[in-house]
Image 1 (cartoon, one colour):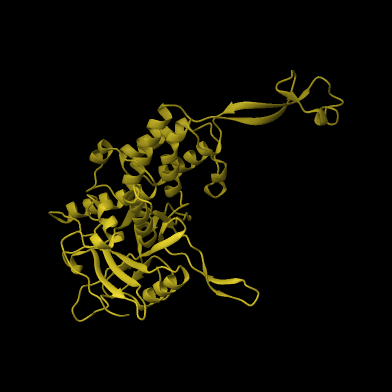
Image 2: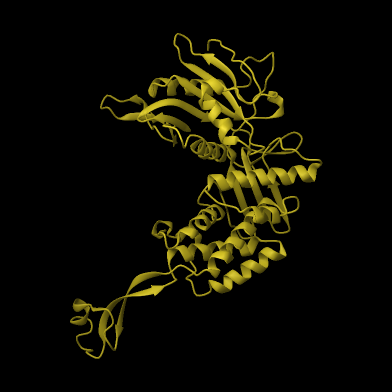
Length: 405
């Protein structure tokens, strides 16, 4: 719980609880609270609509995590009855079962042991010091092929954590089977897992998606989790971060055949300098569109709803966001600036660039644009339309409004 001015996840309003920019699941013993994003998806009733929102949210996570979900697996998921948490547990456990059936990854690890016969090479220093009085033992150093490596320890940690919170019968069964498979792997606390020791190459590349999903479920990315004295669990995603990464990855697909490239959280130029030339107030624009080393467009994603109201020419755009974009224009010497929001029915029928404003005393422009994420059809093309000014209003025709900021 949080006050209006402080941090936290849930805010108690006049009519009920309100989530503060996060989605996901908060689970406690005997109950669970599921928080879903506001996405205008088609649906005949509340249950169907909720299922479609879950489907879209999982799609966004899959794109952001570079996770491939085959069509058969998507069809088999019970979007309307299973919570987001159970859906993610099912995706992870099914993929892990398939991967383990093809063989658990192993690596050669260096070992040191005192043996009656020589194995590998002799540790001369130890042999003639610690074992000088025991010539029947040889100080050996050797490489042994073992499955007890960082990657498998991460998988085991995910299996053990999910086993405590899974609710559906099928998920519990699969996790019990997996726990048996990983019984001989060292049990490492989540906080002590060595993510930096994981090595992925062509022999174990199929584990990359599982590693990304385990990173999500163990709290290393997007999520904040907590374990107290009770069986509680939280799986929460900041929608601002998720929306930004989703848009950036889809933009990379859209611009793959062009000379433009997408940089996420790049730039990192400073607004100010001290007398000794130390930078202050570093900037990290959400998305930079670059041609070579030149920034041709700055895009800042905002997970909030703007309105198309006649009596509000600002359309609900924050003044602080505009000031931020002005700083980007100056620092990155870029004349194309875009504030990108999720599209919804309240904006109207148009998506893409819905307004283009000239920046005072310059030829630079700040665009306000929306993108409809309720459907994935032609999404890269729709995003490319926001980059291409000539086709910026490609979804239904509409003109630009030009004014000074």
